[in-house]
Image 1 (cartoon, rainbow, N blue to C red):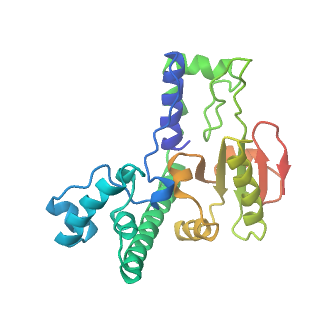
Image 2 (image 1 turned 45 degrees about the horizontal axis):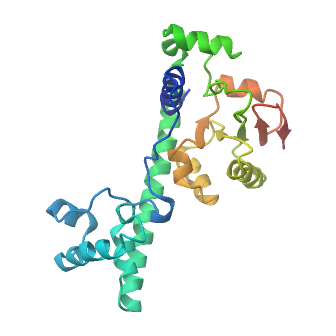
Length: 265
């Protein structure tokens, strides 16, 4: 089970037992900001070097932030967006648009590369379930919710909810072989169901034949939203024995609903 999922499980369980509401903090960019954000843009030399802005541009940036603040959350916008919105000529606007797209692409590439590497390293490490089960409350929760104390690949059921407001817990597991002509179609269906709220997560499971570079290229081919990765609405995984047990004897690619057991191929 990935460290991301371990962290999420521990957080959700502790909040549940404390009768607190669960709220995930988005750790990457605002969807409208293209992935490059700063909580506060200062006049420090480090800020200037990071964004490669001239002194006049940084001064203009602070003026535009005050101008746009009543209409937009400027602290979640990149400097290039702010300067582009305040551009006075088409040439200036185009300049900042190009810088914005380049920075956004670099952020997306780095985010996906990180997720792929975590999945690869996690696949080589021992299962974290024994560590989680050392906590008697967690172990009791797992058993009471039908997992028999087993923690595998984040497939632990979510916290129970009142009958009056049932919580949707179904996830999709999309198993992707190295040669896959239908995977984009199955991913499109899964993504639409995620957007519609029919499921809570998409777990992409790549066969071990995939190199890290091939996984990154695949995510590029479907134009994957890095915000969904950061929020763990989509996870990247390599095939393990636990995942293999779900699709034993089945032809890949296949999309499996964790709640109903329904499969699409």
